[in-house]
Length: 401
Image (cartoon, rainbow, N blue to C red; front, side, top):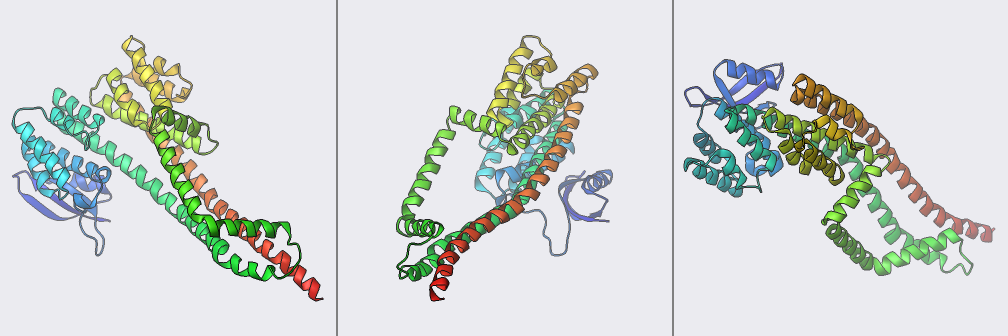
């Protein structure tokens, strides 16, 4: 059975550290709470492993789920928001994050609602975060809202880490392959070309092409770097405009392989985020407007905003979504079932889980094809270079004979 290290606060308000044996992370958390101990951080222990790193070692996206989980634990244990923020500020090493939390603490201490204090720091907290906290305060269910928000952020972090891990090896292979080809063209081939220059015979076409490429790379490599840098700069400027973003996202959706994964990812973010907001008692039309910017695709965001406008007019959510081809009929049907049963948040959460499962399966298939494709492409390029070199060598051997 795994062992989990924890730092926690007791009912009396004291700090406590230790280990707990449990089948999994949720079971460990339940076991501690049953003993009157409320965990602030909880991680599976391993030999030589330290406790969770301080926030200074994590980026905003990685530290926010942990911060939110700790805040939900403290507030759920009956600790006032001001005291909870003060406790969190003492654990944060990053100066900007510490200043933001300290500012929120002073603002809440002065009588401003916690949700309003969060809105003053959009660089750290998204509109979704602020809306969930405000809904929790208005409904008297702030601990539950923070807990659901922590679940949502942790799920997003797991998905990001999964994709990053899966892409690490193919990207490394592509970089190594590119370096090998550049080395061959700039170091190996020029030395062999010197031998060909003394043949006094017309070289084969593949060899002439290879020599021309080598000459261009040797003489004007800096021009290529400038062109690439200029292209990247111009491309980023264009993609930063609304027109550029829409063009990029529309092109991605139409792509043969990546398009389907991007589409499913946007739908998954839509379903999971909307589920979190609806569970937090946020009205559907307002929730849709909050969800629209976070789905990660401008085309689908436009459809969600159009659906929000129709919901304001009195149309049901399922009917508002049905009018758009980018929203699949299965999702629309599940939304209709959720509306009829009064369990829209639960249905959307289950739909997000199903979409995530399909995304994982498609990513696994794509990545399993990506590695051999890179190897095959590298083999073709290297084989072309070798053939271009061998052809004149064969002519030399025939002359010698």
